[in-house]
Image (cartoon, one colour):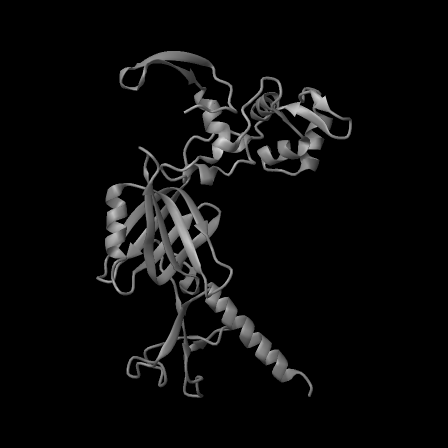
Length: 313
C-alpha cells in the first residue's frame, strides 16, 4: 500500500515473480502509521477501515504529499491535539520552542505538520496509540445462558429517536461472528446484558439485537455490525452481571391497590405481592429499559401532560 501523504523512511526491492518481477516498495515508520488517525484528523478513517473489497478507497482522493508543502493552520493543530484553536495559540505564545511558521500570513500562519507533530509528542500533548480500543459485550440468546465477546475498534451509533435503531460495529473473529449470528437468529434476537464501549456509559438492550452485516476488508479481519431498536436500549445495572431494570407501563393505569414503585415515565417495577401487577396477576405491560431513550420519551410526555393539566383554562 502506498501512503501518498506519509513520507517513506526508505525503500526495498521485492521480486514479485507472479506480478511482473521486481518492484520498489516504500517503507514507512511504524510510529508514523500508528499516528495517522491523530495527525490527519480531517480524514474519515472509519470509511477507510470499512471500505469494501473492490471499491475505491477514500485515501485515493487525497492529494499526494509534496515535500515541504504539508502545512497546517493553528485550528488543525488544535484538532490534532483534541483542543480548540485558542489552546493551540496559547501553546505557541507561551513556548519559545514552538515550531516557527513556514508560510501563511501574520493572522493565519501555516506550520510544517511534521514539526508540529514532533513538538506535540515531545510535550505530551498527543501520544502514539499502543492498542486499538475494544468493546466488551455480554449477551444472552433466547435459550438462556450468557456469552462474552470482544469487538475491536468499536463504533457505536446511538439513535436520537425511540423509533429508530442503534448500531454497533467492530472487528471480530469468524468464530465469534458465527456465534453471535446463531444467538441472534431466534424470533426475538438476542439480549445485550452489558455493553461497555469507550466514551459511553455501560448499556444494555432488552432484546431483538441482530447481526445485520459482516464483511471482510481484503485479506484483513471481519467487521461485524449489530443493530437493535433504540427503544429497547437502557443503562446497564451496576454489578458484574450487568443487565438492566425494566419499567412496565400498564395499558390500564395503576389503581389505588398498586404497591409498586412508580417512575417518572409512568411505568412500574412490579413486586410479587402487588394486587394489580404481582405474580398472581400477570398483567399486560409495555416493557422498556430504565434510563433508556423510551423511558426518557415517556417521562417527557408525562411531564408535558401534567403541566398542561395544571395550566389555567
